[in-house]
Image (cartoon, rainbow, N blue to C red; front, side, top):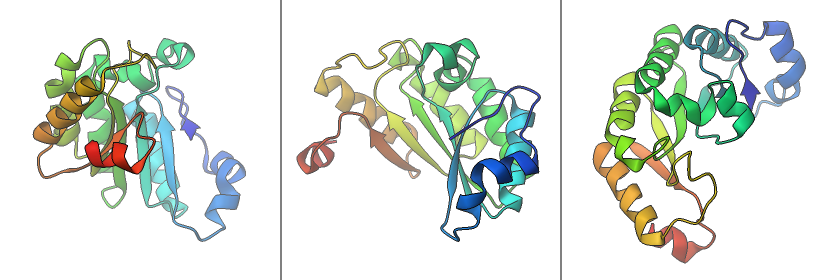
Length: 178
């Protein structure tokens, strides 16, 4: 997990200091990025690629008040055009990099899903981790039927694309039901 502030992509030296033991391990590495500035995120992705990272995951799901206050995490869902711009910028800068997104069912409402998923698809995400709650719902209980309906909607909207269901899947029967 790496926060990328607006206009302040971490230097190669800072990345090496923070993640070097992972880079040196030889283990395939996915780095989750959190931010809202397309240029800084793309520059960070390029530097990570240069260190041998083959995959980044963009966190557009975090409902933390601190993260939302910075306009990152789940706050990006309020602006699907920004989500698209971030994805497109990274894909254009580092075409070989696998880019995935983690997101929720919307910021305020699951009615936002079609526009969000259009941005994800158009932006070129390779795969999606979808948490069924909205950002506003935080970690509140959501009826299982609602969760299943939201997962089904994402499957429809991302037909043919890989996606993983996320949230309250605690047992094998849970996973099989979702």
